[in-house]
Structures are given as C-alpha cells and as structure tokens.
Image 1: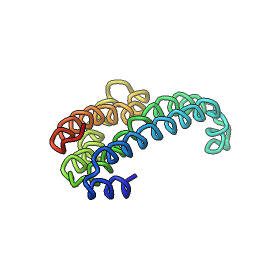
Image 2 (image 1 turned 30 degrees about the horizontal axis):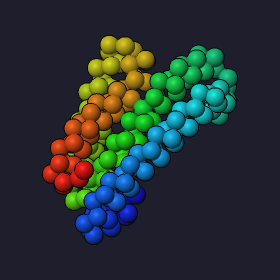
Image 3 (image 1 turned 135 degrees about the horizontal axis):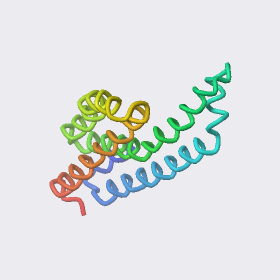
Image 4 (image 1 turned 90 degrees about the vertical axis):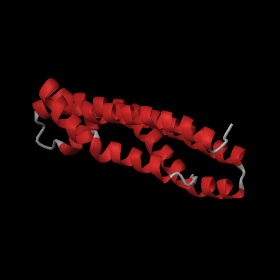
Length: 152
C-alpha cells in the first residue's frame, strides 16, 4: 500500500491515491474479521498451545482475554493503514502522533488505570480501547488533511 500511495501521490493522481487507501481499508476490515472469527472458533486450541499443564484457571482467563483483546483488530488495522498513508503523502506529523498515542502516550496510563478500576478485564481491554481512541484521532486527522491535500 505504501509504495502505491507514494507513487500515485508523487504523480499527482489523487483519485488513485485515495482508491489505494480504500482498498487497503477494505482489506484490513476483511482480515480483521477473519482474525476475530478464527480467534472465536479456535480459542481453546490456541490456549492449549500455551497451557500445556491444562491449568483450568488460566484457560478461563485466557478465553475471556483473547476475545476481549482481539476486538482491537480493526482499530489496529485502521491506525496502521492510516499512519502508512500519512507517511506516504508527506504528512509525517499525524503519522507520528498516531504512533506515539498508540505505543506510549495512552497505553501506559490506561494500563495502570484500567487494571485498578476493572482488574484483569481492564488489563485485557486496555489495548482495544486505546486503539479505538487513537482511531478517533485518526478519523479527525484524515478529515483535516484530506481537505488540505484537496482529496475528494
């Protein structure tokens, strides 16, 4: 995606640039759905790989946790695709902000706060909720920079 967007953007072909972004987003949504579906279908075998001692408590925690954690799949995908897009169209600042929000600024305080408020469920929910919040910033940034780049 990044190479195609850079190529079309460099040529000034803005409709083709946006089309590649749309294809990337659709692909991301399909793959996110498949990932979540596979996690849902194969939760127990996946847990079994890491739970060779058949610890029942670990199995219950992991079953809930995997389903909660992987709710983040479409948010992760959106944020990653959008950060690559911004980099490809010479908008490093929003790409950088997306990356910092996801990997440092929001995740650390959320991990501490959610674990205190909701225990283990809070820990599992940190990543999906942080990614969802970052996605909101991404939506705003995409709208703002789309108009700056004269995308239609």
